[in-house]
Image (tube, rainbow, N blue to C red):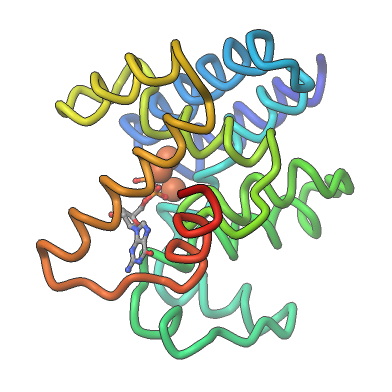
Length: 185
Ligand code: DGI
Ligand code: FE
Ligand code: FE
Ligand code: FE
């Protein structure tokens, strides 16, 4: 697909080599999961490829994008910069890349926190981000095993592990993460 080449060259410019490699790995993993779990494989590839497009933008660039599109951050979002890149990324692909598919936009938008009523494609991107080939931490191995049994079980475990690791570091936990967890447990 010609647009994929355009996205790749843009990402190669916008991301560090490591983050670009991660994006390719997530795209590939998301495609495999889409085939297994019956989601649209092309949408999964595109959302996986673009999910971290805003990750290496400077703080100023991210704030500029948010202001340009009148995005108001919640108190929690304002206090944790890691929560900006999914929001900025979703806005970026919609307005700067003219992607109008709401499933792709929301998969990018909720790839960090997840949300209550998470969709199949959103789960696939969330989990592909956790278990892609470049992820070598022990939790990835646990989740790779779980997902062979059930997508929902793997998603619940992923949220549980995320919440535990955030709480261990005394980090703020976004309400969407808690609601996604409660919704599935
Ligand atoms: O962008 P990636 O590193 O590939 O992965 P990500 O977007 O899933 O996670 C980015 C960071 O966000 C990671 O350090 C964990 C953190 N995070 C995930 N959920 C929450 C969160 N941070 C806060 N403060 N609250 C959350 O609910
Ligand atoms: Fe991310
Ligand atoms: Fe990622
Ligand atoms: Fe993730």
